[in-house]
Image (cartoon, rainbow, N blue to C red; front, side):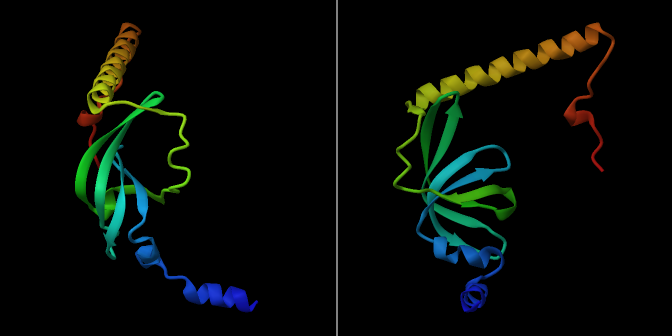
Length: 141
C-alpha cells in the first residue's frame, strides 16, 4: 500500500508528466496526418512541443522515407499522438527505407490513384441518381 501512495505522489497530471521525456526521441502524429520523429526538447502547459533533429516520415505501402526538418515547433492542439521511440527496437522494422525523391514520387502516385478512385465512386453514384455532398460545401455548425 505504501508503494501505491508513493506512486500517486510521483504522478503529475497533464503535460507536466512529460517532463521526464525531455531529450528522448519521440514520434508525433499530427492532425493533418503527418508523422514527425525527433528529440523532445521542450513542452509547455498547452502541450506545445519543440522537437530537435526532426524528420518527417512518409509511409507508402511497405516503404518509408525521411525528410529532414531540423527544429520543429508543434502547436499542442495539432498533436494526435506522442510516443517515445525505443532506440533498441527502432531498426527492427519490416519497412524498406527509400530516398526522399522515391518516397515523394510514390506518395504522389498513391494520392493520384485515390483521387481517381474517388472520381469513379462519385460517377458510379451519379449514374444511379445519387450524390454525395462535397466536404467543402457542407455547413459547419
